Image 1 (tube, rainbow, N blue to C red):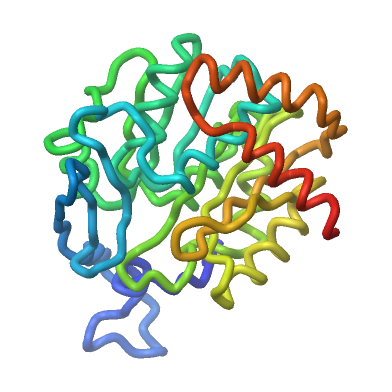
Image 2 (cartoon, rainbow, N blue to C red):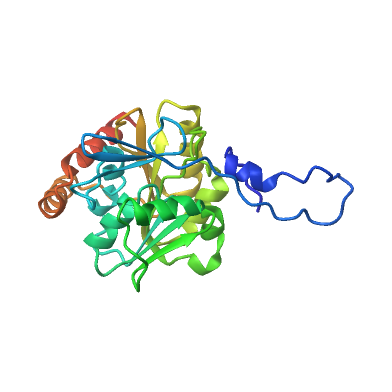
Length: 275
């Protein structure tokens, strides 16, 4: 299925050659994707990943390489409030590997899969951001996220999907259609959850929320952080929000991980009040 993507990678993949014409029957020759350069910066002991501009694509504190440094990335773990022992966690868009590393360390019973289109990002994660090598539990796949979720071999087998799909243009997620979110929902187990990094003050926000609501039984959002990052949570099956139980669960997670989970529950409560 051809999905329109506001992405320099996707555009370079779908351009015809200079001599192609509308009457040519032969399929165009495959073109290698073009990616923005990988660049790094460092401040106060934190290394940041960029795609050749000022926008941050991920971060790692050098002294705490397995810690999730950015608050929005911490919020991407809000599914932990509802799922205690995931068996398969998938990261769409690797970044610095922060979420992948955290899940790999925190859930020793789980298969952890990272899907990343840009091979340079994978190399940077292994060489600069201390992503472990693949083993029987960890798989890093160089692949388009759309192809991964459309593959029926992955349907119904994933407990958690975390999507952070931005390119150098930073015009919203590069995959943002109802078809994409439907495919993600199809990959989830019956109680599965998807978290997505969105820009709350960008036109892409409403488009993505609408597409997610089309695909999922329930969609909730946490309050914006940083420059307007909003984490949206898609539930395959709408949960019953027992807030005393959620606060108790949040305290358990904080004791085990030091993540600021009480704020997640506060955010869910606020979302329910404004709906």
